[in-house]
Length: 213
Image (cartoon, rainbow, N blue to C red; front, side, top):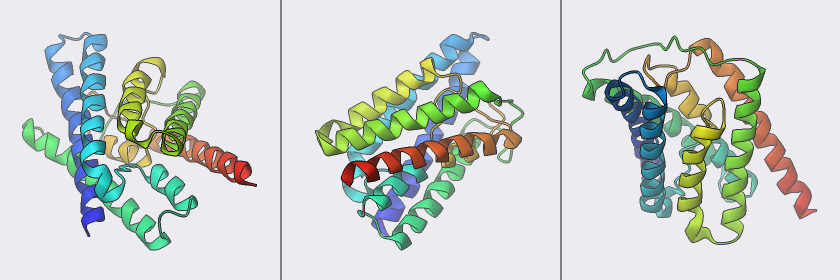
C-alpha cells in the first residue's frame, strides 16, 4: 500500500500545485495571462522536482498513467499494480483539485468551460507527451539521478512552447476538467487530449520495443 499511497498523495499534491498556482497567478496578475502562466509553470516545475525526489524511492513517482504504462511494458511493474496505480493516480488528481477549491473558498464541485480543442492543440499534446516520455525513458537508461530535474525542467518549459500548455497526462487532464479556473479544460475536450496522449505513448512504446529487437 505504500506505493499506492505514494501515487495518491503525489498526484494529489501535483494537482493542488497546478490548480492553486493557477488560481493565485490569475488573481494576482490583474488579467495578465503571461504573468499567471509564469507563476503556474514555475510552481509546477518546483513541485514536480520535490515530489519525484521524495516519493521516487517509494513508488517510482509516476503520477501519470502513461508513465506507469511505459514502466509496465518494460516489465518493471505487474499488471495488477499497474491497474492500482491508475486508480490512485486518477483519484489523487481529483482529490487535489477539490482540496484546492476548498483552500481558496471556491465551490468544491465545478466543471470547466475553458475550450481547448483543435488540430493544433491535439498535435501539441501528442508532441508534449512524446517529449515527456522520451525524457523519462532516456534519463532512466543513463543518469537516473537527474530524472527529477530533467522532468521538472521539461514540464516548466513545456508550458511555454506548446499551445496546449503541456498536459501530457490523462489523470491531470481529467481532473482539470473539474475546475473552472485558470487551468481548466472543458469536459468535452478531454477525449481529444487523451487520445493524442495515448497515441504518443504507443509510439514511444513501439520505438522502445523495436530498439530491443
